[in-house]
Amino acid sequence: QKEVEQDPGPLSVPEGAIVSLNCTYSNSAFQYFMWYRQYSRKGPELLMYTYSSGNKEDGRFTAQVDKSSKYISLFIRDSQPSDSATYLCAMKEGGKLIFGQGTELSVKP
Amino acid sequence: NAGVTQTPKFRILKIGQSMTLQCAQDMNHNYMYWYRQDPGMGLKLIYYSVGAGITDKGEVPNGYNVSRSTTEDFPLRLELAAPSQTSVYFCASSYSSVDTQYFGPGTRLTVL
Image (cartoon, rainbow over all chains, first blue to last red; front, side):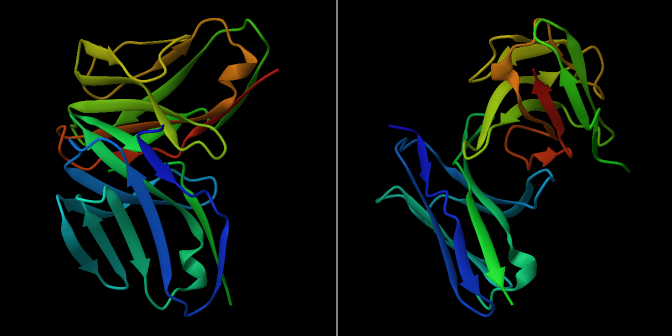
């Protein structure tokens, strides 16, 4: 079993849709949870950073962490074509990041 | 402030050749990392460094070497290139182990 599991998609939605992206993990020691966005042929950039369980909102983006279920989610409201990218979840173990496989999202106008 | 820079952007190697991927950061970050990204596989940590002169292995270090003689630079060396090393390589840096990692634009390497 991989430490971090993420459905690779691809996921295609119409503009304005609510998008839900998810990851599951097996290591209960993870405390820091991140979502990175990666545009085609670019490096990943940090989108959301959450410590322990709970919700965090930033504009159209909401990150949720449920440590009891070992499940994290990223919600995108009112999705835009500019949101088309690969979204990678990541979790921190000591100083190292463990990444999921990434979900490729396409938002169609 | 250029952030994290990587050179070259693209490279094609023949089996058995060697090369060094360059990475530099101008943010005075202590921590630097090398990842490889294969299609549909996320990023895997190759090596990391917590400061000049200190390096350690990540998840997939075989076939690679690193050194860190300065705070700014963290080159990755491939000694005997193999087709399995065909990948996109990303360098990243952070101020500390709990701070955000900032990524460079990547180097696309093909080994034929």
